[in-house]
Length: 553
Ligand SMILES: Cc1cc2nc3c(=O)[nH]c(=O)nc-3n(C[C@H](O)[C@H](O)[C@H](O)COP(=O)(O)OP(=O)(O)OC[C@H]3O[C@@H](n4cnc5c(N)ncnc54)[C@H](O)[C@@H]3O)c2cc1C
Ligand SMILES: *[C@@H]1O[C@H](CO)[C@@H](O)[C@H](O)[C@H]1NC(C)=O
Ligand SMILES: *[C@@H]1O[C@H](CO)[C@@H](O)[C@H](O)[C@H]1NC(C)=O
Ligand SMILES: *[C@@H]1O[C@H](CO)[C@@H](O)[C@H](O)[C@H]1NC(C)=O
Image (cartoon, rainbow, N blue to C red):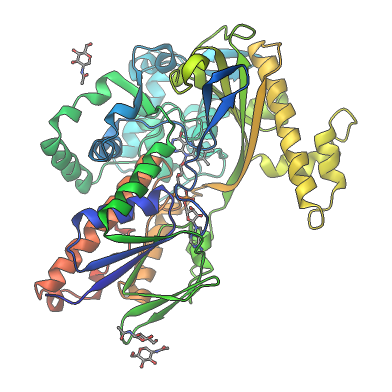
């Protein structure tokens, strides 16, 4: 029997839970797993609240603070579906059929009104503006014409289609997916979005859609075959389903993972355990993990599922690749109206707002609005169901800082939010400042909805959440930096450190889960090799870092 191996997972968001779950499923019993989560709960950005409905005492309303929908498409979509089935969550699914309005109608708000987006690749291809150029450009890139290079999405799009295109359609989509700025994000890390128009038309942060950002690797093909062999019934799921969630919201998934992990008896989960430091001992190959106010934990290997910036602070060496990308903040404003007082003239999934529109009419940094009651109609329960119009405005993103900085421009008395932000001191009055920010976003979201959707009655319930550093921005050169980091981690940590999570190779929930699976499987097969005595044959470069994939994208 091989000696016991202890693997510590840092972070209990969807990435950390997934990597622990796959490890627990496939690793031999001599592998012990510990998950260290700094906060009081697992799930990270997955956070669904069920609240009482003041008008219907026997009903309840579901509100999402973070992600709200998943796409079944692609290998990563298939992989999450498999996980969902293995967790026994099939009956909790809330599917949006491709035939529904929420699947078919997606809008862009531009020049004072909503414009329907083409709903399919063929729709886009027949669109006079988009069609021929887009396909030609797509083929160019897939052929690998500029594999070594990278540039911003804006410069790529402008070069090929002219300026108007990136201003409108593409910038709106980038708002939807990354809350990001087309002039800064890497086209290479995000390109799939442009090419696989049909699949990628939409948004992560608005939950519209989101696939993988790029080309499928050979591993993806293999994974697909493996999954379909075990669950052939998933083969055509994506033909009929546009997006999906769960009756109790997306947090259903992270809660089920946590429960399954606890039931497995394979893993110990420590909440309230923020990791502060890691010391790597190369002579006996152990990592000492220091945790705030607790005894340190010793492990043979660490899998980091916290953000790259958080990891940067824990490591003995400075890896600038971990802190090159900023992460933007997003304000999520849930608004609930009574269905008999407010209705949508144009039902559908929701709308996105282009960058150009933001400088003109929309100073508050609105990225887009999701029509939750259309796209997830049965999440409300009891007599609340069908009685509400539920909207979520997403605001801020790459414009968030500007909004705060602009406070002097907006210094009018009717806007209590901005006035307070301006006059309050960041350090001494952070509570007041937070409140001021929240009321600013609340007002801005309500105004926007009124203006864009002609809804005059005020919402009955409004919840505002400001998420800081919540969406990593893959700046130009991202994949090259990840390749460099891959080499550094392999060299400096000798197989004692691997990474997964939204900061590296995909921000969508699906990507996070699939990347975590790849890391877990690679680590387990490495351990098995070592058990078989093959370890001597393979050199150091065989250490797993979780970034191997960056060389294939
Ligand atoms: C508003 C919003 C909407 C979104 N909408 C969608 C959507 O509709 N569809 C979609 O696919 N994706 C969406 N996304 C993206 C997706 O939700 C995230 O990319 C994903 O949840 C990231 O998961 P993660 O586990 O990598 O990171 P996180 O969720 O950030 O988890 C990291 C965990 O690590 C913990 N931690 C941090 N530091 C330490 C430490 N030192 N020690 C111990 N623990 C620590 C944190 O407490 C946290 O629990 C959205 C994101 C946001 C913010
Ligand atoms: C998809 O819909 C078609 C037509 O309604 C149906 O024949 C098919 O069985 C469905 N596929 C799945 C996987 O549900
Ligand atoms: C590393 O481990 C070896 C063997 O247990 C020990 O002798 C040494 O002191 C450790 N080094 C550090 C820096 O703790
Ligand atoms: C490795 O060395 C550390 C000291 O740095 C010690 O605490 C730990 O117990 C050692 N681990 C093993 C497996 O010998």
